[in-house]
Image 1 (spheres, rainbow, N blue to C red):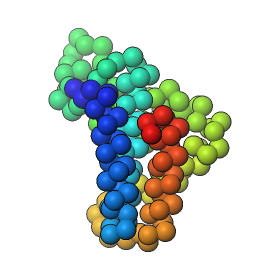
Image 2: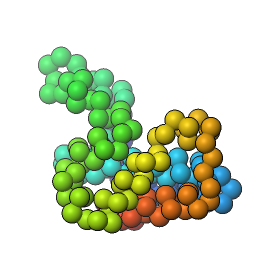
Image 3: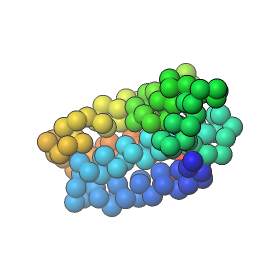
Image 4: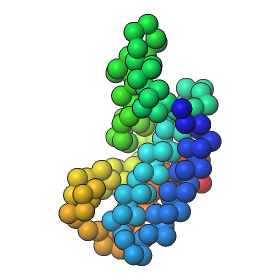
Length: 147
């Protein structure tokens, strides 16, 4: 299991790394910045569930064993990288829409992050595109009170 305090620290470290990478490798900076959002959402899920740890993949297998309170549909959230799915499990999916800045930021981050051509290096982003993305990442991390 991953302690939620570790998740918060790692999210901040990924944000810092993405900022350092921005001038030399904008596309990779975007990938790492999106990862910071993913980790942040997993931390917020811990808060929402009132637990101190987020299950990793080996824990997810344990929770899906017959007779436990979890099943495969639940444990998929522990493995997903889909920001919208993670947002749902934070309990903040309805409230984020009332914050125009955070809602816009989420749309912009979702639009770029996890696109295959970005992950596999077939699309290179400009410094301006990457900077705009990182600005939106920071909006989201502030919204979720990580930075």
